[in-house]
Length: 394
Image (cartoon, rainbow, N blue to C red; front, side):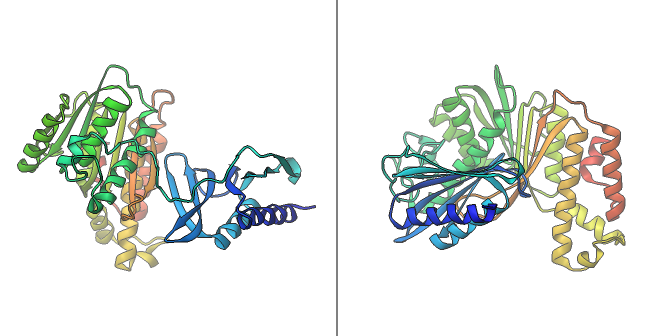
């Protein structure tokens, strides 16, 4: 029996367990497909607005993405994944567990085992989801109008609360990759009203039991005053907010530097501050990419993608990718391992790109090779200079 026949048999049994209400969950692993950084996929039944669906959790190296499908769509999708991508899957039901495995030379094993689950789980969607930042006993969440005095999240603030936790989930995986002994100095550039800054301090101090010293940098005096009052009321002794700009802030000694939605070259200024400080972790989520767009428009290089860049919307997207791609290379040149990925809040907010630099203490960068790639990219797109490159003096 070939792979497709075994897949069909597995999917048929899966459909039967869903139909007779014995299905518990499904896991897929040993991914060998083309989607970058995808590691595992998990499926479970949920109930949304009285309609039963299959909820898929796509587990990537640095994040999870949840997508919900109708039962029929989900079953078809599982079949496609097993045919092209995942080489191992386990179906858990209340009657048996079923293992699917593609071994060497395309040999396929389909094996039933004794059930490990005693009962099918509740279909309630997200009812008891554990959050890294609990809503209970958090005065700062109350002061920021996220919760009431009893720790109940306001209906109007549900999305913001989910966004806060999603942000902490992302940072938690990154913090594991850096040394955290002793005092951990964190700077949040452009901290705004401080939603994420407060949550990060809370997580570092009260969940990870570290010794954080967190500073929020914000140019609006009223927000600085407000946030310092909230921090004082929360007894967050080592969290403070200062009035200033990214460019003017003295970042020496910073271990973690964060700048979310800094506009245009302000993101470059933040990365520069992190590199100069020798920060162990640099996290930025860029906003606007005007500097490189102007360079591309000015010089109108003739290349393989100029049929796209003659259209404004495509030029804008191209400028975003080129700007952030060169930023990532400059971080590598400066001794950082880089990650660039899309993060999507489960609050249905717009997609964002996050650029992460983690100090590389093991493998020295091949600076000559990286510099050549930067120069080649600039020449290809007709770019005279990238702001980050210029302020670093590369």
